[in-house]
Length: 331
Image 1 (cartoon, helix red, strand yellow):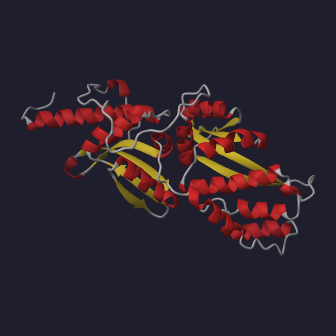
Image 2: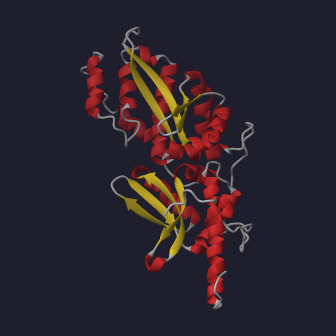
């Protein structure tokens, strides 16, 4: 059962364990604080983007243009309305953007589609604090198109089809298909366009950035702020088990493997057809590794409250286990 609708104030708050000790299993942090006026560390923003952000090249019909198509780069981060303040902080960090709300779901989107803003704030940020795995692939392709737009290549018959080809190869999990790409190229008069080794050469160029071998602790917390869950499940023999989990698309399984190696605990499970899950369920790892991590590198969305409840629940579970082992019935 998920921790929804819990009255946090009614939960006992006694702590039995101090988590002030350093985590011996993790590397020392090498992050630097943000001086942008927000509370968000730059690595946290990148981790948050890893989970809830996207780099996208939009293509719009526009009869006023020579080639009848407008190319718009868009950086987007999505979050539930209860965590709208985090998006406002990120907007402050990037010095611009627009917040849009879907009134049906109360989900907010932070959208940055200004070419100058992307060139001057978004690209430099992710160059210094990179996303990883499949998300890095998207960013790399996105950056290439943005630079082409800066150089006015979208206004040429040589550059525009190249941009379309790159846009349709950015996200391996995208619904954009090769057939649709060919339809667009044909409609624009590029029936015989041959992209040759364009995409494969770009993929070779980006290889060095795809690895996940150096994780910043703030980055991990940012990932967790987007795609993690602190919850309680009911196991066999009516055992109530607290757990921590992060879910990613299977294209980013290597990132979850790196997170598992960073924490030196937990297990990975496939969620068919397209997702992978990292789970930590044993009390010792939760107390000695997971909880101290998030106390040192805190969450900023509604997950902060759920984390606080999990801490209290874990402490309460351990306290009751100790009491029961002594043959005393917990009050």
